[in-house]
Length: 444
Ligand code: SAM
Ligand code: SF4
Image (cartoon, rainbow, N blue to C red; front, side, top):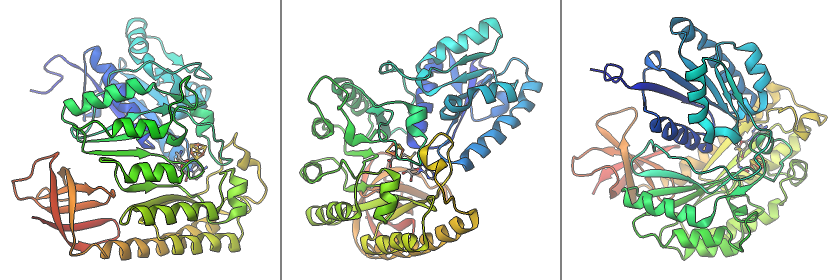
């Protein structure tokens, strides 16, 4: 008997984009649960389908528009189905979505996600389309229930929005200004997660280092980390994303002296050229960034450092690209997430002269990835023969006989299941083989 036969109303979410969006989808699910909906993997059975969207790059946007179009088929089979487009693209393109896709019944912006129950009930009662997209968030949205996808690892949003206005980025326009959650609410949520058996939390924000600046108190991100570090039921604390401009030696020292904060620094550098960084409005130089890396490596030997890089920013010359290449060769990141610059209308960089042809951007991306992959592999190979603490997350995606977990440095580890380890356990794995993206080993 399936869920439909049990009389449940069913929902299906499709999430695009970053961790923030994945967490938003958990909060959408939490709200739908309160009015009797259950999740289904089978889209054909769903009464409500929510597409939680991303518009950071054009490639994501194109894919999502294709997906919204595909939903028409389901509406023609079941005219009562509620198809919703929510999140960043709904915020940016509400009029276009309404006009182009009559089968969409709900368009809900990033500042309205806490209204889901009210909006769905309205559509169920009236049968009419609903568009709810506030231009900006006047205040912090109320907390809503969450259904966590994982049983051991949970995201905890600490702030919403971004004030940085990097010249290439659409996020501040679709997510609004920074709004921090009160420290007490965050700590209460982490305690509750610990009581429910979660072992790992990730504090989420576009720029976590700005946490608290908009609050009436003197509390900052360092205070929040120190408070979270006292919660004994949680084994590991992560956070993302840190802005290099606001990362400092004081914070690195707090992390070094903590009990639970993982030795992983994700510090998006974006470019290795000072003039490009200036045009990006990133607010730091490569020299400052190098000092941070030196301090991290000196204070916390074995810490991993990862980054984001954009190639083909408008006007980027071959020399400036080579500066980025040299930069990654000297910093030696564990992992770099590399992106082709994508022109986002409404951002300053979209108007800059010297937009580069796609072929040039792709060639640079390939060169960058080849260099980085080699570095990642070399760094991982140094771990062969070592014993590493791993948090067991679940079955490997590709092989049911293998388990998957992560090191404190956020590296993925696979090993042959023995039957003694349970999801959520911290186990010791002897690393036998290193690849670019994964480590393989055996349980000790
Ligand atoms: N707030 C985070 C930060 O400052 O690093 C990251 C947020 S953003 C969603 C994630 C990454 O997307 C950025 O670090 C950047 O590398 C990339 N990104 C943002 N806008 C982009 C654009 N227009 N084209 C290509 N990549 C972009
Ligand atoms: Fe975008 Fe920059 Fe804000 Fe990150 S810090 S979300 S890259 S504007």
